Length: 247
Image (cartoon, rainbow, N blue to C red; front, side, top):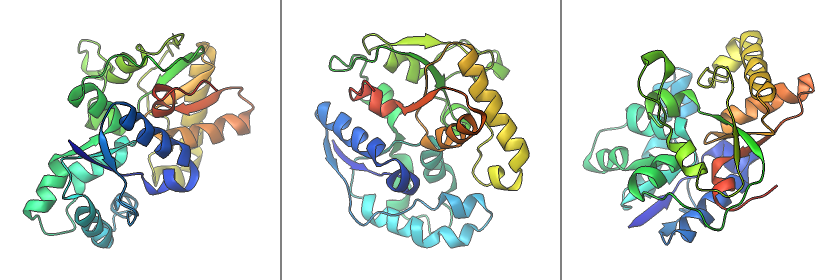
């Protein structure tokens, strides 16, 4: 399988280690991975702000770079959801439809496509609280939603359970939004900040040393809330743990 790796623009700018860990992890698993050097942004920020037509150039570039791959993998639920559900600023050609149908968030690619369950090189002797972003939870369905009263499942928890030494803390409200929401955190700053602080405190009170997530965007927001409030908790992307980070 030929895989095209997309590293979201904010990860490239602020958390390049997440992109590196994703590449290394996929290669550890024997995958043929290419990182197109011309990649920029998927166009999500413009669409989220209501400027749909302004994302056309980003979407067209994305399709040009990734249409030749069997699968496009990215360490971001929100970017994955944007490509699948909102790539509407450009003509819907066969290439666009191929890209939309074959774009995966890292966790679902590992869990559903490669069906990996064990990571023998990974050991993380810490207690972690799992944060599922709203996009991953309610759009990609990588875990069950409490509001539906459905049987519990969690793809990221299944993957993390294959890491030696890891322990899990269970917050009181495990699938509540952290308040980031992209432009929401700007337009509703006070509400967003309080939601983030509530989320961080919930994990901390449950005994988590780390908050782990498949979305660096949510963790970026929560990290800022934790630092301002003096909450002693750390943050790590799931790709880094699965790739063998011990911190």
